[in-house]
Amino acid sequence: SYELTQPLSVSVALGQTARITCGGNNIGSKNVHWYQQKPGQAPVLVIYRDSNRPSGIPERFSGSNSGNTATLTISRAQAGDEADYYCQVWDSSILVVFGGGTKLTVL
Amino acid sequence: QLQLQESGPGLVKPSETLSLTCTVSGGSISSSSYYWGWIRQPPGKGLEWIGSIYYSGSTYYNPSLKSRVTISVDTSKNQFSLKLSSVTAADTAVYYCARHRAGTVRLVLYYYYMDVWGKGTTVTVSS
Image (cartoon, rainbow over all chains, first blue to last red; front, side, top):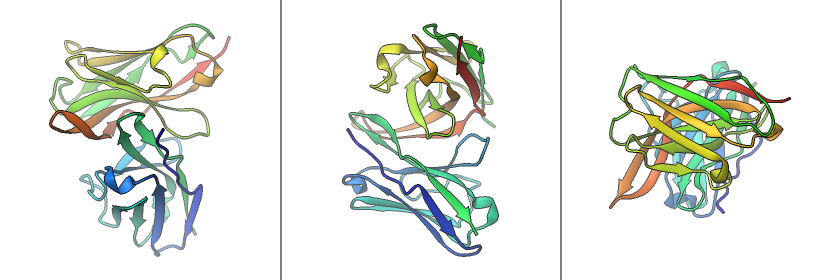
């Protein structure tokens, strides 16, 4: 089976850069997607296919993917970025796989 | 603007079948390149993908739930539905419906993500 590993929590100072990682075996060979979920709300797609932003997502959100780690980077972090973030890939055996989620705290 | 809305009972008894419907508005469920599916989230936990369906009826199911899941589509009503049988308390969750964007190379799926989500509906399994 294929697993995605995310840190349980990440903290970032207001205005600084947050990096949330997603680890998986040779994840660089897969397309990684990222979702933001605020309390009581449905997830929102923030990055698709490693580094693409859907319309309406600020340029402060970016993604990269190489080797065994994919990274979601949030520049100039704002209080409104506090949320849970999930990575996700398609795997031919498990099909849709989500990471366990990372809680981002903006200090 | 595409919108998805889940509907169905909020309370289901153990051993019974959970049934939910997702109504799609602002777009056609018969659009190519899109699947339509379900994801759930138990209280305080992460996301779990349940399965998805193409307008033609082709389906993908989470292997861990496959024996209990049926997803169907009604293109005339622009709706798709979820049935989960033999439910237990472990099936208590918020259930989301979502549009899935698929990418293929030589008919082999190589990326799959959810770009539009419903607001979710809470289903509790309890007697």
